[in-house]
Length: 247
Image (cartoon, rainbow, N blue to C red; front, side):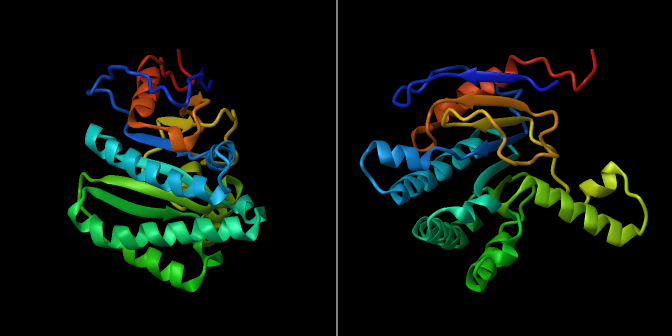
């Protein structure tokens, strides 16, 4: 049974906790939520929230690498996000380009790999090319794998994986054969899924992979999320008793 822990925290107060360095969750997933509300509360355009959220992602990814997290998957842009105002979508894609261009220069000297999960065929050709260049860099064993879920939908991923697996085998498929065709193939399932902003739902994020992930919800908006907030989520995770359906 999924364990749900809701942590209320003031956005401007980062909790201080001690975490067990020997029990760091290998794979953390985060729904980067609350950028628009953060900006609106400050009288700023929603795009300002997305820009601040991109800065926070860099900080959290670096912290994950420092404390020994091996896989970080963040929900950057869902298949439903195309319904947002065109100017907001354009701003998000611009931020993605900026981040990837920076990463192209920096990743070779940092212990972080970038991978993109989702249907990138809907993105502009130049962005697809940039993604291909960056994801080919810095294949270093032991480095943090940072997965950016872009144009991602959990149901769409399962349909894609099922079709690809059936096309390969031509017969009914097993769970393991389907998993070989998920966007995260070869990576472990998330141990901990974090959703800031006060929303308490998955929103189609990693539906297959998070079947037994520990869930942690906080009212802190993503642009206010700090390494200390991440440590608080990890500390909560470390207090859980994970039985995976057993006793």
